[in-house]
Image (cartoon, rainbow, N blue to C red; front, side, top):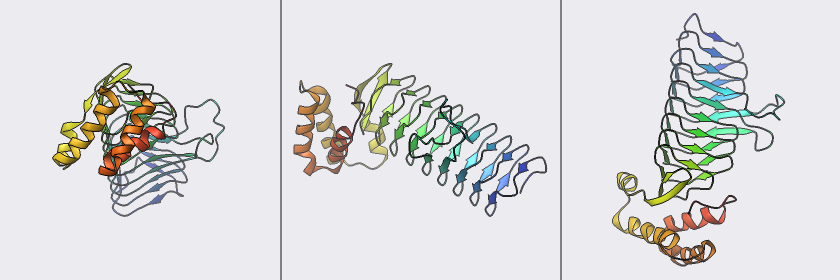
Length: 256
């Protein structure tokens, strides 16, 4: 399953039923899990671990050095989970010692062409990053979040679970869970109704999320006052609790 033109270091750990296509390069201290497919011209750089069933398309660069001038070839890592689709020309960099030293990608993510995931990012599960989306360093993206094409996320920002970024939106502050945003700088537009329906959220759950959105964005309350209101209804809804906790943990504040 390894093409004769591929270069695979002898120290690389290759799982069962792995396909490594023409002109791929697999560097030392790497792990390629069972059932992974590297189509062609894929580079898996050192200190990178792939879980099971990942499919990586041509000219992707996975686990290269971070684009950080302070980086001094420290032994940092990229860890990718299971079942991810990584399309053409995607770049994912390893972590830095200024953070946990690990860039991490979860499971079942759909990462489209020309996406960049910088050092120390943490990507959850079941996300979609459309073409040319870019995550600067230290960005965290929650489960089921969707970034439209050409979305741009500033370093240290967080993108909440089940949120949605419209095409060509820019974020310098955090995007709370369940919120749909648009623009550069991005502004909140509504909750992600369609996404929640597709994931089986019932009317009661969506109604409570909508109520939280109105408190946060449709009232005249200051942010700290809105959080107090969210906490008062959070016992009714784990989703509202997630929103309140997300805001409480924000270091860059949220879009408003």
